[in-house]
Image 1 (tube, chains in turn green, yellow):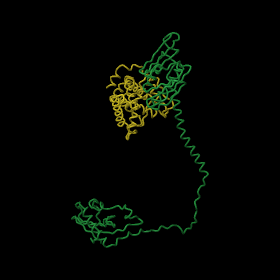
Image 2 (cartoon, helix red, strand yellow; image 1 turned 30 degrees about the vertical axis):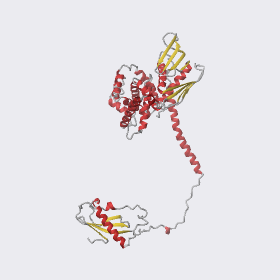
Image 3 (cartoon, chains in turn cyan, purple; image 1 turned 45 degrees about the vertical axis):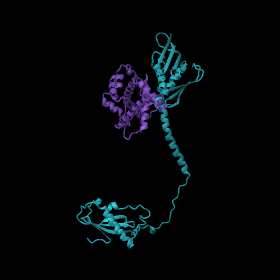
Length: 308
Length: 205
């Protein structure tokens, strides 16, 4: 008895024609199938071999789309390949089983491809039509995961091979011999303390007067806070030729005065200019002043250490 | 709310239990459900939430309909299962059992099937954007709809995944749009089987 079944989807219709063997409604033997795409009225038609190839290639290809990495899939005379982010090309080569005598090229977008896949899936899960036709899926898991493990061992093998090659190459390079010098017990190096030379002192008297005035002005400008201390505080301050404070140290015993209260920290210049600034080997010329900060917001600048 | 109406309508008349039997435990994954599969499942659920922010309730409702209470007895279990995605903020190195993965697969497909029409439209919009045809066809409103979805997906992703985000904004959008294609294919007549196989295809054990 001849039977026709159709699987109709928005973008394509799959028509199955066949005969049932014996009793019942089961379409057991395929005589012809037709897959018509509605967007351009193209037609793929043929017999069981072509249907098997179409089922296998579409199934596998749909799986690669779902993974987000579509790749070309070819089974027998049917090939599917990505031609754009959402474009796919279905190629059907002519075969004795197919209706087309020329190679067929059908452009499908993702939704159209989904419909093609779903029409085939409906056919595969239909128990009354070609019960021996099943979804082509299981081969994917095993074979893919196997090839994955191979691709993982490859980098490791290249690494080991590279190490072996490097080892063999290095074998030919002579090992450098350390040059042994005759040593006696007397030539043991004795550490000598070399005190760094004291920084040069500015001797120019006119410059000293100017520096003293500049320092007084700087402190005046920057000492704004009301003193919280009750005893006069003496600081030793080093000034370079550009009237910059390059260092200071408290001479008094009291160290509980917050540093922010005095302007010295703010005024100190970390030497960065290569022309004027010093280095451990070449200290810059400085001169020392003694500043006495008094609790009544006044201060004095002296060349000599005050006797307090 | 859209999902509610569609899911409650008697569309799910398929013998879902029969489908379960067709989701074989894949071989070669001795350490349980692979990391990429856990991520894929969670991303699909996240996309469903981005389509409809009430979707979590629909999913829990589906647990009863699909008779999955043995695997997912309550909301907390469902939350814990979703946190097996290693990128989650609350990831606690728990693994996903095969039955739990099956349950999520069935829930995803049960939702993807009724929204298949919407997925067709959204994937088509993705294609039109990629081919610069939106203005030409005057379909700006479809693009706005898609952008709204992508933005909801992004904010859900940022709030659920670990910080700093494992993906930048462009990558999140790409993921959001790719999950639409995945959901489209999940909505086919054999969506569960297809999704199940795609989860383990090429996955690292």
